Length: 67
Image (cartoon, rainbow, N blue to C red; front, side, top):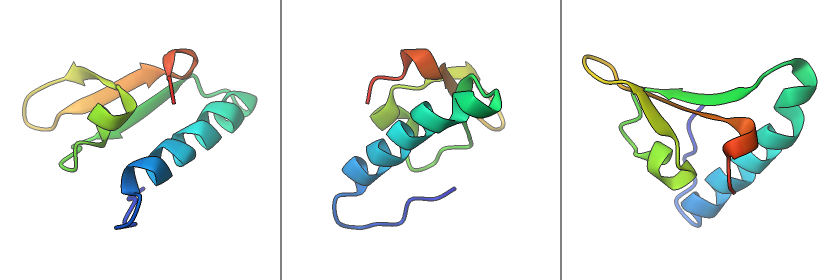
């Protein structure tokens, strides 16, 4: 999923993360993850690197997500 809003991009990303934090657990999901995050969204959301190398992956437990 890409967030391509130029205006207020960071706040829109946080709104999307809030939505995921509320609804994803209802369907059994426990983590929010990104793969190959060239846009540095992981920094905005506070995701932690779980695999570094050819393709970096970032994740965080939904209950730890502070948005």
